[in-house]
Length: 274
Image 1 (cartoon, rainbow, N blue to C red):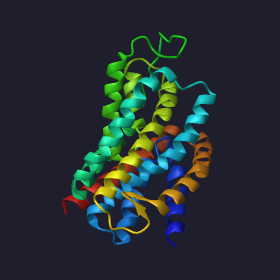
Image 2: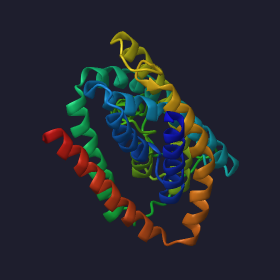
Image 3: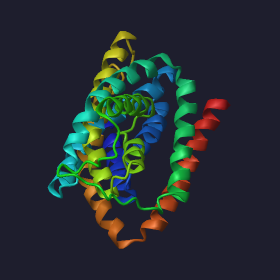
Image 4: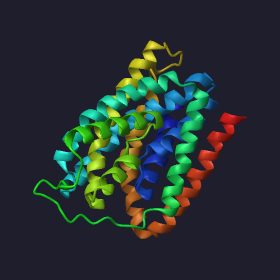
């Protein structure tokens, strides 16, 4: 029965990710939080399990997304190589930081983050950044130095672990800020999601095992059945969501999703404060 529930979550998360053009983490974390709560898991572990499992599922979806963007030549591999070490180290350490934060405070942090994403989706996204200085590798000459990119990767990695996301909400704005065209920013961000997801999942497993989480079918803070069910279904339904997105108005879709995220974010804040 559990596996069926997680398959349904995967179907919803994948479809929504493809439909709204966002990472599955913003959908998966709230849904897992609700399901784990109904399963009467320890309140101290629910949010950590939702975050760790979300990052584990992003491993599968990021591979699919990476391959699709790479076929279109939208991945700036030199920039990816500069960011990846910081992303991986930061996300692993971020999992450790999240493990030290109480479930209550994590709810509040994620709630505020979802409201921020909702605000950006509702009011942002109208400006296109044009890249006037691509070199042969697709990297803008105005991008920061390698050490600065490494440090930026570390910050994005830490935040991604705490929010349970693939980092697209942070990597794309970082790249476009320095003049990278949107298509390449999204493609490179998709590639960056892989080291984030792998390091984050390993981190939540490792630090979760250190705390000896007393929840069945888990490795640390990663729920195995949830990981399998969500990964399998989201891989297929994301493509369906993307097809539907081309039929409907993108602006209307973004606003509808922003409203949904606002409701979920307020739900987290309400649960955390009451």
